[in-house]
Amino acid sequence: MATDLATPTTSDSSMNIAEIMKYLPHRYPFLLVDRVLELVPNERIVAIKNISMNEPQFPGHFPNHPVMPGVLMIEALAQTAGLLAFKSGGAEISPNTVVYFVGIDGARFKRPVVPGDQLRMEANVLRVTRGIWKFAVKGTVEGQTACEAELMCTLKEIA
Image (cartoon, rainbow, N blue to C red; front, side, top):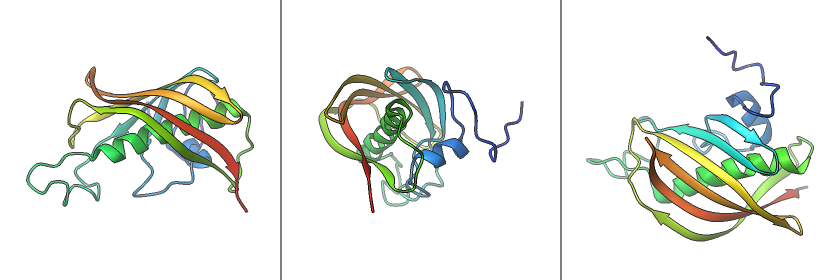
């Protein structure tokens, strides 16, 4: 079944790229979430990032053996967690509201992610304290853990 990317989804349980772009200010080449498969506000989110050889990091990382940089995997997981925070926190969609990535603990990289892979990203809310969200995040490829960490973020209004 074809999906109209110009029409945002209406369900809290999934989001297409048009709806993701309403919440995240990132754009090419830094928008790293392609689709949300599942979203349960205040609990968890599952999203995907399709890894393509056409991405700008691969000519330099590494020319003869392209590997997605770990920092970009963590950023993709942070964007996924940010979507969950937005959808859970009741923040209005506004160009003046952003999610700031404020901390990372225990990051581990266990498997390279290469062009042709689909990175499945999961974030689970651990707690929310004074506007700081803490998430357990994990990225997998074909059921194998590629990376995992605990991330913190906060929603802020900017001028």
